[in-house]
Image (cartoon, rainbow, N blue to C red; front, side):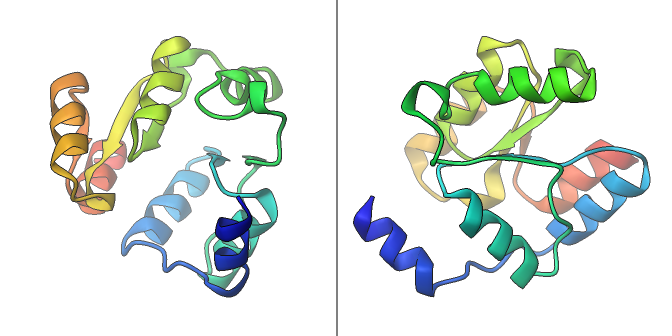
Length: 146
């Protein structure tokens, strides 16, 4: 954790091309954006701001107690309660198995963010376990809004 926080204190990751457009369209249609991450809330908000992305409605970061961190469904439960939503109203978009496990626990639809990884084992798992696998942000955009 010390190595990770030291690194992210001085490095802002670049948002994937197309993410800003997806988020803007989501918000323009009355939707919400929530982030459930293994990063800290302060870094998530900074990264969104530095990339010109809209601020998420809710952020659940690694500063939460261990039993509430992803892959725990704690954040999904809080999102559904705060926004009066049911599992089918949500879509978890993630590039790793913990996001898949979290979504599966609450029967929330899951979409694999295939543009975010190039690890054969991860790609094989996602293709095998989820019908919603997008290799590009354009593919996710079309799925959501076309």
